[in-house]
Length: 224
Image (tube, rainbow, N blue to C red; front, side, top):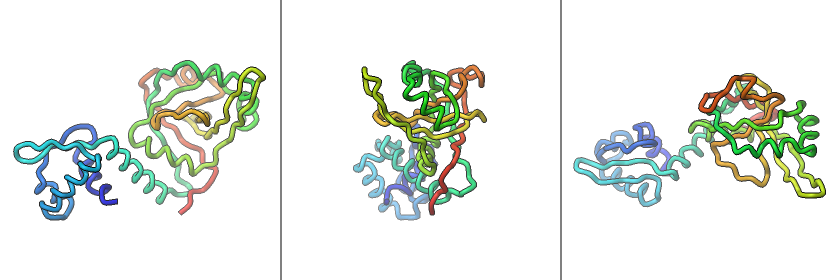
């Protein structure tokens, strides 16, 4: 795609989280094109909603939009998939955040607990740990598809229906755990809910805002 390379250059110059001031002639040095061609390219990126641009004396102020950042994340994930080695771990990094308290109710349901014990090999603590991934890990999260998920079936307890979901075995700061993704819930791309055989906050002495490392345990080999 035409946009990926110039967006990458702008991102490397710092345009993901702040406006950068640059002229078309200056940016042409990064794109190996003429300043006229670069000016047209920047206009096209603006028209396609990949950047926001404000003309100022001596150049322009540019910042990537959410669409532009999402495009780079997709490119990043695709390169990760290309170069994913059989022996390479998939690492995600993020910070502990407060949850809504709903996880405890759902995890504690017998229809789920019995499946977790059988399929994951542990009886989960009735609650989840919520992690907000950093920007790089939002894209890398897609590589969990390199692993085979543990499927959790939905069930009916005669009062209501509980939906299906899938789990990905992981280790968080070395502790055996699993990411759980309900089938009917659309989570933000930067949010993970994690279950474990212990209260992770207490066991790992975690507080809100603390950084953690998550290693996805591969079951399938990456293709390519």
